[in-house]
Length: 301
Image (tube, rainbow, N blue to C red):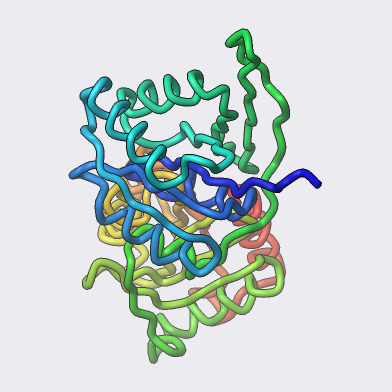
């Protein structure tokens, strides 16, 4: 009877953990080898804490920009720790020199490798093979099913985070509650009042499939200020929730010509502005505004 070899996936850890988290959850290797640098140790530790419940995790530090040293160091580590394993390399993350070093090792071994493409509407995994003659072939490409939760995403990017129970008092909280209640039946997951990085507050975190969005939900005077746009830009920076996070500014009013500069700023930051004027007018969301809210959120997610 043929012995089934254990599998190990080599992950090149960059600033964005999602392209490493998703393939591991999808392919379920026995071991994940997290290859990191001085700059990405925190991200590697976040991934280790998330992944070690489902597979054994090994961490290995390499030089970020020295190809020969990174290659030789990784080759030695793999031989010592997973020498008899079936290897697959994920070449999505890391620096370009790290990718070249890992690709050379994959090519030497004839080991398959994968690449993750994050599209607007889905995440696609490309699986490549290397023939005995050294020719690269695309074996398959597939859309990844849902493999993460909001908690997974937040812990992968920021480690620990805080969340408040319920909504703020007053009309601002009432608007947040109305938006939450409208979206909750139509998205896979939604979480209110999250705090990351100790001081950055996010009104809503929304998940549809593997795609994550964050929203600032403002009405009245707060809806006419620049601060919510700055808050979204900060929360989705590389060092916090990352460049793959969709951003929404949900307003309980309609902007007029005096807010054109805010509209331009939001557009420049790739923030989707959703105006729901019925709430400031009547204290509740009209059927038309509820429909618009659902449609605009699902359009981006």
